[in-house]
Each structure stands twice: as structure tokens, then as C-alpha cells.
Amino acid sequence: MTYEQYLEQLVATDDRVMVVTAENRGAIRNLPSIIGSRFVDVGIAEQTMIGLCAGMALRGRIPVCHALATFLTLRAFEFIRTDVGIGNLPVKIVGAVAGFLSEANGATHQAIEDVSLMRGIPNMGVFCPSDEAEMIAGLPSVLAAPQPFYIRYNAMKPADSLLLEQRSAFQIGGSETFGDNSNDTDVAILTYGFLLREALVAQEALQKQGVKTRVVYFRTVKPIDTAAILRAAHECSLVVTLEDHFKTGGLYSIVAETLLEHRTTADVQPIALDERWFKPALLQDVLEYEGFTGASLTERIHTRLREQTAMLPKNGTVKHQTI
Amino acid sequence: MAATLTESRIHDLQALALRVREHIVRMSTDGGCFTGASLSCADLLVYLYSDVLNISPDNLRSPDRDYCFLSKGHDVPALYATLAERGFFAKERLKNHLKTNDFIYWHPNVNMPGVEFHSGSLGHLLSVAMGVALDCKLRGQTNRIVVILGDGELNEGTIWEGTLVAKALKLGNLTVIVDRNEFQANIRTEDLVPLEPIENKFRAFGWETARVNGHDFTALNAAWNALPATTGDTPTVIIADTVRGKGIPSIERRADRWFCNFSHDEVKMLVQELHGEAIGELTSEALHVR
Image 1 (tube, chains in turn orange, green):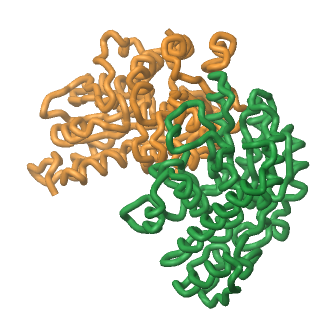
Image 2 (cartoon, rainbow over the protein chains, first blue to last red):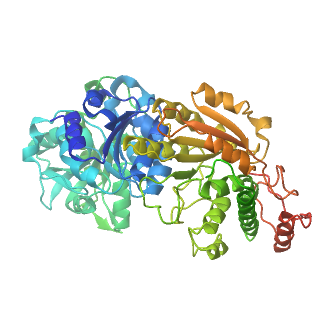
Image 3 (tube, rainbow over the protein chains, first blue to last red):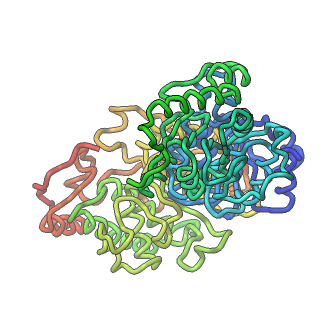
């Protein structure tokens, strides 16, 4: 089932759902003729779209609105924060081509602060699916949730290693662990979104090289599985945060906040975009140029492990400590 | 509302408006409020909430009632005074202005019965009202959705974005009322970002327009009764010409009397001024800065 087919089905079964767009029709192009007046296109007017969705939510609707993630979370930010956020209205905000998925568009289109902005709004949930199958698996819970949600739209086909039937049931605030789940693991790679597949490639490579590695994938970035973060800090020598997002405000920040709140520390390696936008290109080329392919990740983690060993005191350990 | 207002009806509305203005003046102390902008729209709100709009304390949960969104949220004293006088909540609560034991502060809060939505950031509630209007239209309702905008608020790009989109969505059940008091925060609109001719701008966007004296109940009533049916395709705007500070000559049309925080003695004097019994001499600090 595609995202569009899912929405079509949903509109047919739940009369609260409205599909709204600011002329971003790529994923929902066939819906106007199928769902008629339940489809609203306001034109290239993101702020008006968000206000309109807030108004419809006041009337009991569940608007699912679409625009490119940058224009949605940046241009319409104050409308999201003020109308949807303060109102705590169940508007579901779907941002297209977020993170590396903007490919060759350039920095104007790079939503790499979207997670940071959206999670900063009280009650706003953040859902960054790994692929289309997970997106559809998660949408029933996300749309049924009484609060607003930001969804990093991702229609990529699942990797062979990530067929839905082999994955655990989707749960808001849940996480999935792949690989070494013992209490004596070398590396934990924490991630969200489509980079899961690259993380799994890295995990396999590291395992083969004798580095015990787990991947912790967050089903929602907010609320987040705090226990899984703490477990990684406690059980793994190195915690890697992997995200196509600025280093500031995303998963690395969440991990830092979580560890501090629990008076815990760990050796954390952020793999993110540090104070810069990424090189515009087709996705695979972006991943290679920016060092986010499974192979690059493997190498970057190895490098960090070597640095870690060099820094070790004699007979010392870098396992977590309470501060 | 009747096609024409009888003299006794006009007298009642004027008496109600005077009571609303008294409340506004009494809220303009111990921290103060946006007195001038509240006084300019007092007659508008009194008119709308006196059996014109189908909104009452009893039907707030009714889906087919009318709606009235106050987008220029800083004039909330006028709204609260009107709602209190119309029985949406106890008048006693107005004394809680700026107190932490209630929700009455410088901008609207939805916990106050009768407030449709919070506002304060200008340029927001046109689009929120459009969402409500669109939903009402989709459900085949014939109610009217009113949005009150400030004239300074017309500086905001989202007003014109919404004006374009409301026409595109054929929201004939949407009526904007512009409180045209000729001032933004610190300066006359025409001296900063000129707005005139306002009606032409809305007309160019495909809206139907009317222009009236916003303090004249007879004129307001005529404009209201002339509005096209809500089942049409064209949104409407009423430009209501008003006076900032209306009712208190010593602060009327004064750029420096936007936000007012009067002394208790000044409040007493200004209430007398409202009743035409004196002209106040104001010594409290005038605030210029937004």
C-alpha cells in the first residue's frame, strides 16, 4: 500500500480526516478526483494552510497537511507554534523531502533543523519513519493521537533487511534494537528516519570486524524511548548518534539532555551536520560525499574507536559513569 | 437584528457600549491595557454580540452557531467587557485583570467563555477563521464566520495571502470587519504604510466590500443587513471607520495613548469624561514603544 492509498482508505473510513496541501501534490496527486471536497489545496501559502488546519481542527477535523518540510517548518513555524501548538490541536504536519531527501535542491530546501524546531513545541510529536511501510504502519497511531504531530515524510521502499513483518509493532515512544543487545556492547548507533538502513549496513560490517554493535532505532523522536538511550549509555563503550539533521537540536541534543537529566555520561560520537548545510546532489552521492553511507559510517566509527583506545588510561574503561 | 433599529434599541446599544467602555477604562490601571484600540472597536463588538451574531452563552457548543474571531487580540478588554455584559461570564471576573487567579490578561485566552481562539500575534486568525468557515461550508451550514482585524494588522502578509485563498475557496460565509481606527501601535497608518484605498485592495482580490462609520449603530446595521447570503461564493469585508480612544476625548486619536496605564485618580476622571461630565487631565506616563 502506498501513502496515498492509505490516505484514501482513511478518508473513506474516518470523516474527521481532511487532506490539505500547499500545492505540494507529489505524494497525493490522485486524491483530488477521488476524495473531492475532503482535499483542500490552498496554493503556495504555508502559513494560511496551517491556520486553516487549526480552524478545521477546532471544528473536530483531523487535518493532514502537506508541504515541503523547509517551508512548512520554517516559513509557517510561528503558525505551527502559535495556532497548532498553543491550541494543542490534532493537526498532522507532513513535511516532504526533509533531511538528505531534498537531494540536489540546495540549502534553501534542506530541512535539517525541522526535528529541532518541531520538538521544541510543547505537545508536538515527531515521527520520522525509516520507509514507506513503517510510515503507513505508524500513521494510525500518529493520526489517532490527540496531539499535533510532525511527520518527516519518507516514501522510500523498505530495505530487504527491514521488511515490516520482521519488525516489531509500531509504538509511539518505542524503539527497535537490531544486533547486539547484550550488556557488554562496543558500539550503539542511535538513529531515526531512512538512515536506519545505512546504520544496519555499518552494524553488519562492524560485527564482521569483531566490533559488537547494536542499532537503536527510534519509532518516534518525540516522545523518545529514554530507557533505550540510557541502556545504550550503560551497556556500550561508544554511543553514536546518526541523523540527517544539524548537530544542534536533534538526536545528539536529545541524547545529551537525556544523559544529563539522569546524571549519566557516555562517550558520544555525533554524526550529523555540524554548523553547515550539505552538498546538494542525488541522494547516494550526498551520502557518499557527506560520509553517511554504511561504509563511511563504519570507517568513522572505527576512527573514533581508535581515538578512544588511545585516550584510555591504563586498565581504564570508557563505560558510562554517574556524574 | 431588525432591518432598521428603533430609537429605543439604539439607546439600549449606546447604554451597553457606555458600560463596556467603563469596564475598559477600569482595566486601564494597575498594569494597564491597550485602551485606545479597545475603545475603537467597542461599538462594533456591542453591535455584533447584541442579537446580531447567533452566539450566546447557551450555544457555544452548537456547531451551527456563528463565530466571531478577534484577530487584533490586544483589544481584548472590549471583548471581555462585552462578553461579561452579555452574560458569558460574571462581570466580577473583570476585576481579575492581570491577576494570576484568572485568564484575563493583555490578549485573549480560550478559557474565557466566548473566546473562539487565542490571538495576539497579528495576521493569524483570518486563516484560522477560514478553516472554520470551510468546514461549515462543507457541512452545508449557513452560519456566518466573522473575523475582526485591526487596520495596522493589514501590514501582515498573511492577511493578503488569506484574502487570496479565501476567495479561491469561495468562502461566502466569511466576513472580515476591519477596525479602521487609523492608527498602528505608535503612528498613523497613512504615515507609515499607507492602506488607502482599502476597499479597492479587497475588491481587487475579489471580495465584496462595504464601508461604514463603526460607531454608528444604524449604519452598522444597514451594512450588516446588506451582506450577501452566507451560501454565496464571495467573502465580504466591512471597513468600519472608527476613532482610536473613542468616547474619551482626551485620548482620542493620540498616537501616544495606545497602551495606557492610568493612576486610580485618572481612571475616576476618565469615567466622568466618558459620561460627558468632565475632561480629564492626564499626567501618567504615555507609552510610545511597541
